[in-house]
Image: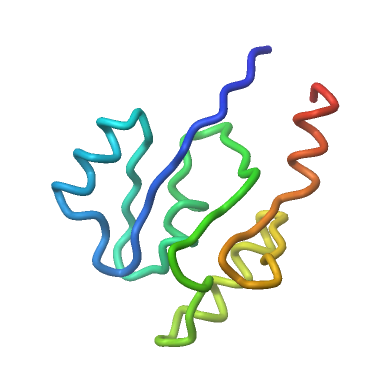
Length: 104
């Protein structure tokens, strides 16, 4: 079984605009959208089937407490096996990384 690492790009509640989507596609990345959710939740829930997350990076601290979705955002990261980095600018999915290196 071959493994491929891909970048999946999502945005917050307003989603990616057409220019952003075009830029994502131009860089061989996958754009994903999901209305009224944090970008973290969008990426984790709109990944192509069979995709397992390894790392999640953000442009601002994860799941900012600015709306009603903050608690579900952090829980979604945890439910996917993720752990926020100390600065909350990303999440690491350690078990998935270990599986990848073990050849699973």
